Image (cartoon, rainbow, N blue to C red; front, side):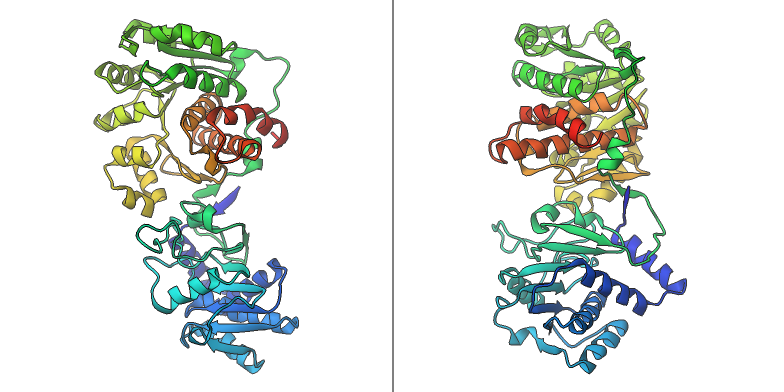
Length: 503
């Protein structure tokens, strides 16, 4: 499992490594060498440098390119240096490596490779002045672009950059072909804009020992390791009963619940009970064969609270997924309240369930009988937390952790990459694709989670479920394209994840 560190934790770990006897100058030399070794260089190379240690990595790189006989040029925003950076800049001067100011450069279009060493991961705010000029020239160069540590203009903790213009679809940051993270990945390498501005990313280890390890990138080997081989001496009960509670006449719940049920079965559930308003029973029945259907008491196609019915439904199930298309009436609020107070298994709350929850006091979560998993997208999380979306976007990991810890829940915050946290340990899954931005994708995720969460450590199970969902979506996009794929295509591809992703 790959560790991820916040910008502050990385800064503290770097300082501790230096205090432990490895000089900053040595770490800079290691970084430059790692960058040099990570790229197939196409000459001539332009290295665009700011004023901090990120620029110092560029000076080391310039010296190594020179020694290898690769034509390179240093382009400075201004002649201001960190202490260690100045040492390596002076070494470049001794070698008579070409240096000029960004003001002297009209275009970078003549270069084969352009290296972005303007800002490091500590950058926040808006890009202005010469930095803005440099970033625009890099993006317009047509060269192979390498960003050092993180793309300049991108926030290392949240992956956000300022828009180039108020209504623009582009952002003021470097768009790279390769981003080379130094030491460890940061959250900003995965969140928000990261996938749109980095075609590829790698991390290089330069010997900085992490002081704190509580954020992890969950990858294929970690997800595959969650599932053991299925023994012959087992049965459907071994793999868990799950209940899916949702649907209403208004929200065409039958079709979506069918997709969820199929997703749960494809993700390994032993038995799936689909509970929905009785009026939808006959609509759903032809759509799924492997699951059982549990009609709920209803009024005009909307579920109504019936305690005896609910007690029977959840009596033997390991997981319950609640809320998908169920509506936000007083009756459905009573159903959710009952589940929170009485159901002792693992309760996944999504969609309308999250809207209902946002109207309740948080104490209902703290005092829940079972363990609760919340699966909000940004707008739903805004309603749950009461925080503005922009505040959440600026610190998604911290706010998700805070809310999970305060409510004693596991939060799965959806986005281009997914954040999963119980307030103590945090996972990020990088799986997923633009084609999943379509109606019903969240329902499919809930179906997968209802199966995967039946066994194992819960916070990791949630992360594994998110990974499977994302990978199935990626496979679906390969088949149908980002524009044409629909949520049921993701369900169709779940078996391929298990079969071909080394599970």
